[in-house]
Amino acid sequence: MPRQNRVTPFSTLIADPGRGLFMGNRGCLHDGAGRIVRPFRGRLWIACRTEFRGRRRRLMQPGHYTELFFLDEAVALAAGHRPCAECRRGDYLRFRDGWAAAGLPEAPRAADMDLILHGARLEGRTQRRHSAPAGDLPDGTFILGGGGEALLVAGASALPYGPWGYRPAVPRPRGRVTVLTPAPLVALLGAGYRPMLHPTATG
Image (cartoon, rainbow, N blue to C red):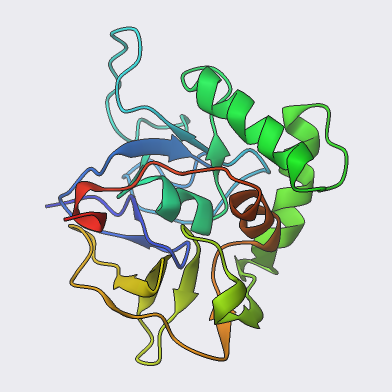
């Protein structure tokens, strides 16, 4: 039976057998039986490589962080996660440079970015959302579709999200839309940061 550790663009955790391209964490979210009992713990929300220096982990060990999995980096960003500064050092440095290029508040340390992101990604204990004209949003942004689905902005199109990959493209919506990706990360995407996407995004 799959564990409830797959992250969606809505920042929720679902049970799905797929692993996705990235793993990460937002603290210890499970109890001794491996059941999810909280949506996050702390401000450190990162997205990591699934393999790094041959390290091996047993999932959801008591007292350890909960291993989370993302379809791709665009999903991780929508959920409010940033690149890990250790296992994804190059991506983290690109992220940090993009942060400055986007004109976001000065954040010399990863912890400073985490503090800003924490306020932008949450409203209480749930995902904070905002609205924007659909035509102004950069590629890689997730928005809420008219049927309640998560859509990835991609040029003149939008790609419906699914745990196993993106479904066939639909036209990019018009007018104002509800944006799932936190506002600072939308600005970072607009400044040129390019997230790694699942192969189905280009297939």
